[in-house]
Each structure stands twice: as C-alpha cells, then as structure tokens.
Amino acid sequence: MTPTGERLIKQLEGLVLHVYLDYKGNPTTGWGCLLSAAEFARMPVGTPITLAQAEAWFARMAAPIDARIDSLGVPLNENQLAALESLLWNNGVETIGHAAPLLTAALKRQDWPAAAHEFLDICHATDRRTGQKTVDKNLKKRRLAESELFRTPVKPEPIEPEQVLFAVGLSLHDMVRAIDMTPHHLDTADTEPAPPPEFLPEDV
Image 1 (cartoon, rainbow, N blue to C red):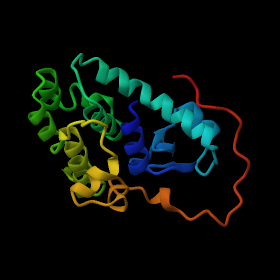
Image 2: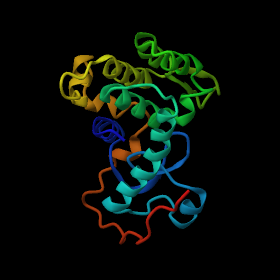
Image 3: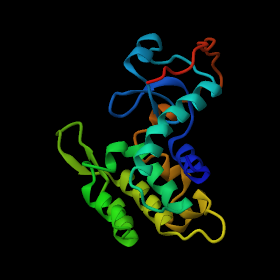
Image 4: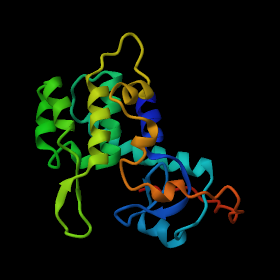
C-alpha cells in the first residue's frame, strides 16, 4: 500500500473501533475492513477493538489489493497507484478484472486518460427498496476525487489526498459520506466500552 493510498483510504473510510454492519449488512470494523464469518461469530456488533487490531485488519485487507494491481504488470506512479488502491478498497479487488472490463483494458494498454475517465462510471449502488442499480451521488463524488488523483502527475512528491479533494470542490466531510457511514459517527466519547478482545485478525 502506498503512503498516499493509505492516507486517502483512512481519511475516506474513517476509523471505527468497534464492530458494526456496513450499508450492505457486512460485519465491518476499523477503516472499513470486513470481518470473516469466523471472526464475526466471536465478535458480534458492538465489540470494541484496539488501534493495533485496526491496523492489522488494514494490512490484511491491503495485501490482495496490492497483489491485484501488481498483476497488471504496468508502470504506475504513486498517485495512480493510490487512486486504484482507494477504488479497489471501496469497490472490491474484482474491479480490476470482470467487474470493470473497460477500466482494466485501459490500464493494460496504458491509456491513462481513458483509465481516469473509467473511474467515473464505477458509481452504481443497489437501491435497497427497488433492488435496481442506480447512480449513487456520494460514490460519484468519491470516483471524481480518485479520477482526479489518478490524473495528477507526481512532481516531485506525491500529492496530498486533501489537495485532490479540495481541487474538485469536496471536503473530507463530503467524502466520508461516500458510503453509508452512519455507524462511523456515533458519539461514544462518553461511554465506557468493554475491554477489547486480545486476538488479532485471522489469516485468510
């Protein structure tokens, strides 16, 4: 995981030090990290975690993302890598492959403008009321920021994620709403959570 990608993902996802269900109903914790079925069986919703555990889950989830990007075998600069890391974190590693064939093809032929444009089409979500795929305005904002980062040359240092968000007229507050993040913002400052479990994520 690139330093730029890690900072961007952590800013967009927000840190949650307990287990919750994401907008799809998946057990999640840390910076938007998914739990395995075995982990969720031991750690129901509300189970607190430590910062060290959150970092361990982050590293575990980053590994297959890096492997999928590396499998392209094309030269990418720091900002291009960071944009792809954020995209795959949010949309799944299958984004490079069958889930986004036009983006994958553009990356393989090193057509960077076309690849940056394809980010903007990966912004559909299933409406829970109708079951239909529709454009999600918050996902579209996130894709815009990622696309802008992908287009930005590295000169001479990688761009800070905040610069990209502000360049496209977005604040971090806008971006953390890119998915339904309501559990991330519960005010638990005045509560005393139970001691966190002492185990780290399973190897999967």
